[in-house]
Amino acid sequence: MEIRGSKILVVGAGISGLMAATVLQRAGAEVKVLEKGRGFGGRMATRRVNGACLDHGAQFMTVRTEAFGRWVSEWRERGVIREWFRRAPWDSAPEGHPRYCGVNGMTDIGKALGKELDVDLSIRIESLSCSEEGWSARAATGECYDADILILTPPLPQSLALLRHSEVSLPSEEWAGMERIEYEPSLAGLFILDGPSGLPEPGGLKMKDSIAVWIGDNTRKGISPKVNAVTVHSSPEFARQYWDSADEERLPILQSAVEPHLVSGIVSASIHRWRYNIPLQFWQEPFYWNDRARLGMAGDAFGGPRIEGAAVSGLALADFLSVSQ
Image 1 (spheres, rainbow, N blue to C red):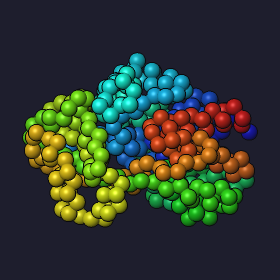
Image 2: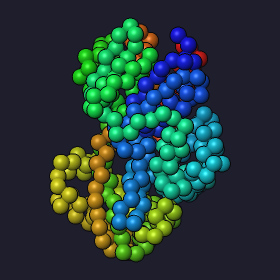
Image 3: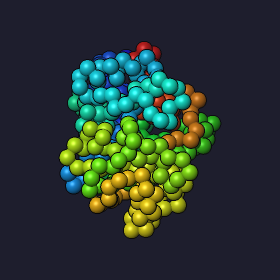
Image 4: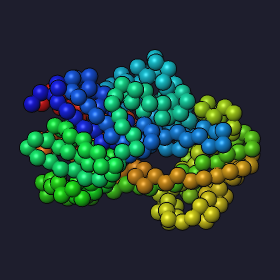
């Protein structure tokens, strides 16, 4: 079957799904992207709170591969991203390496990719069915989406749950291997300040032996010029312990771990939960493909835990389909 003219359904508008969809569409496929959330980018997420702008998921991205580097160069030239910093106190190499962020927030990258694609947001897929004619996906709204090829890019446990609920079977060894892949959770604190944070250069602080592992200054980063605001990522242990706790219980604890590092007071705070923050194990290949079912999967559980890993996974799957199908 030729990719050109094929109908491909991509579930998930994070970086992996968007990259795969872009390459496949440029190769001539008819691509539809479905995203359960209200925006693009997955963990490349930006939120506006009381006049502040905060990146509350992935804080920056790096480049280690030529394949991803070409895209990053294009985004820089188009003014989608810029270099936030190159050298940090925690770098092991003296020269460091560039960390890139969206000009207005990390979600800028997803938005830029989404402009080229046919994407339906706020669509939650409830069930899938596979036949010789292809795939059919039914949304919670009752709408059905048909395709020749299905690509799943949500966090792997969510993709497996959808397949299991839909009674779509995979080879037993593959299924068992994927089920062993687990993720670390994280709680992200979004703190609005009454003045500058006082964080040292470059406006981000990695912490050890604390319930908070990262503090990022969104104002120093350049995305929240009018209101001072910091993003705090918790340790996975703290996230597991307080995952279902009320904000009234967990926010003061997280706030107390952060306040000694700030020179200004916290005037408002909220928490966002990232259940699938970082995969702890990885699939042995950069993507999954089942030729009989015409089913592909991609994401950070296949390509690696960074933004680049998820992006390269989506690119690898799309390149494989473009060449081999």
